[in-house]
Image (cartoon, rainbow, N blue to C red; front, side, top):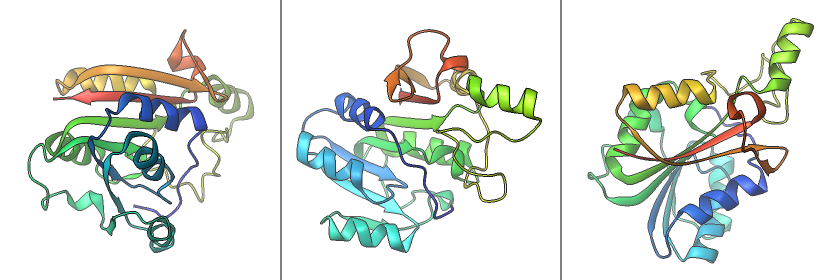
Length: 200
């Protein structure tokens, strides 16, 4: 997985924090600089652990006093037993891994619940840029040019919902965000980011 990680919005982190129960055990896959884990520890007193591939990001996590291991989640989570965490988080990581189907299957095995967040590649601004500009879109949730993007898989909110149905993954909760606000209507068109709380 690449070292570059898109910055989640404040509301994105707040929704995840609201979904997680007090004192739960949490594994954050691709935890970046540990900002979300640090907030979860402070606000929900969780037992937190992170996995990250970037050495620079790990240094930030260690400076925050977080427990983070350097691993490539594309190789799986074989060191972790079934349902060994209350929650596994894949926020702004799912679309960056080489094998998202395998990684999500592992996350659902290791976690009692899994939280997935990703940029919606069919957000209205992206559609306009592709249709009228004839170019790969650059938006707040997709801030990279085609030649330096960490994103390997391009999916929409509808794609993910259909994927979950096909894989018999239960969507327990969902939230959709644009410009740091929740989107209530037509999320596949109007939301920059989708967040899902899943169970198997």
